[in-house]
Amino acid sequence: MLFNSYLFIFGLLPIALLGFAVLGRSGSNALVTGWLVLVSFLFYGLWNPQFIPIFLFSILCNYFFGVWISQSAGQPIGRLLLGLGITFNLLLLSYYKYFNFLTSNLNPLLDTPWPIEPIALPLAISFFTFQQIAYLADAHRGLARDPKFIHYCLFVTFFPHLIAGPIVHHKEMMQQFDRMRSFTLQADHLAIGLTLFTIGLFKKVIIADKLAQYAIPVFSAAHAGADLSLLEAWGGALSFTFQIYFDFSGYSDMAIGLSRMFGILLPANFYSPYKAGNIIEFWRRWHMTLSRFLRDYLYIPLGGNQKGFLRRHLNLLITMALGGFWHGAAWTFLAWGLLHGVCLVINHAFQAIRKRWSMPPAGAGELFLSRLLTFLCVVVGWVLFRAEDFDSARRILSGMIGMHGVTLPLGAEIWLHRLGDAGQLLTRLGIACGELHYWYKDEAWRLLLAMVIVWTLPNTQQIMRHHTIVLEKVPRPLEPAPAWMIWSPRGVWATGMGAVALYALFSLTNATEFLYYQF
Figure 1 (tube, helix red, strand yellow):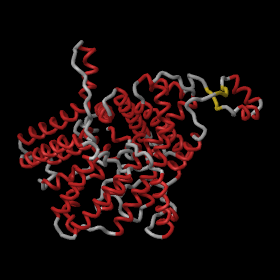
Figure 2 (cartoon, helix red, strand yellow; figure 1 turned 90 degrees about the vertical axis):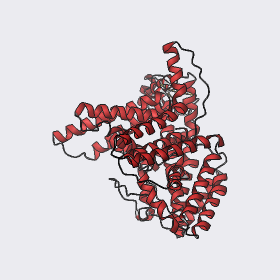
Figure 3 (cartoon, rainbow, N blue to C red; figure 1 turned 120 degrees about the horizontal axis):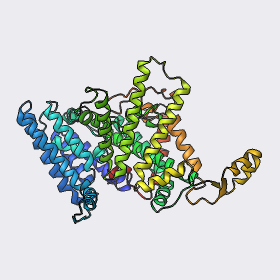
Figure 4 (cartoon, rainbow, N blue to C red; figure 1 turned 60 degrees about the vertical axis):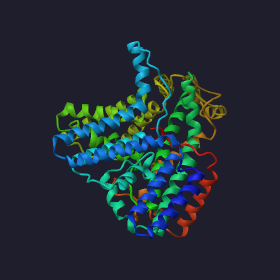
């Protein structure tokens, strides 16, 4: 089920809140927890009921693996059980997500006739697999005590974070579930949660989905073999860059808001990543819980930065390559991860040089250039991420550097004429006016508006800074939001959020999937 659908907003969510309020009065933790588990399975099953048995099978196996591992912590059998548990999860994920990819690549290489059959990908399998692998690892380290089965079910299935994160840790959620017998619907929880949900819905429906209308034709044309002019290529690349930003930022706000309605806090997952001054900072702001997972359960077990200069950077490359491949079974995702890995290696090396040579802190000019360079690297990466294949990515990237000409929209001749000699020079350099098939007259102002929002406005954590909305405060070197932009549950803010909610709801004609649903 989609958060941005009438069925969820006016159906499942009110039922979930009503049941939570009624059962909360009983003082029974088991009843409240069981109700949220039931709602979460309903939320998952309404998407595709055939995936419920696989989902339940994964939960049952991992629960018992966790119990056995925690009971054998510090013993050789515990490590064996951990290995078996992780292998089980990776085999399950590999079959559904990577079997056809491996088969299609091995058949021509080995000249084998292995059949390639359509395999439906269970919704959220990447997220609930990673989350349960982290649980098993924590159980082996003695960081996760044996949970009640009903609490473990809710830990995995809790519908606000089930489909696309945040990826939560066992220790972050179990204490909150234990306290749930005293939970009731509270006005402040609902006000904060509804505000966050509304902001996220607006980002998804009004901004991200509109930008998708410009990105999709460009990437489809590239896949079909079209050569794109500079303006078309950049328009498509930037449209997707901001589409995925507002799509994922919107989902994160909605997930945190939904959880907050029930009095449960999730970890922060998104914090103005396009304001990052370097690629290291970008990954501390984008999909923060995935970055945390890759660091704690892949990079550090590989040796982290404790095994010398070369090994440290090799570990970074391996971590980012696997992180890229986690997003999808395609070589383009692997290339996207490797690109970010290379950028991280360069960034770490540059920081080491600055430290060794005692270079002064970056000034305003250098900070602006570093943010611009970081953003350009991210845009190039998103082209690889979004493209159907390498040839499609090549066509868009070559268009972005002008290899297929520079064509301005019809009507721009008057501006070239007004430039006089400069306009004539531009014409001689090959800049012409003509028909653009993949550039739309309102595209420029929508992209400009997206840039203004991303780079000048505060994020939701800054807007809600006087209220607890995530598990941990996320200190970042950003200017605080102006006083008039700080949220309060009354007056102008209440009216404004109501108007935003109505606008988003009336615009919700066709519910579209969140981009991270496919991972």
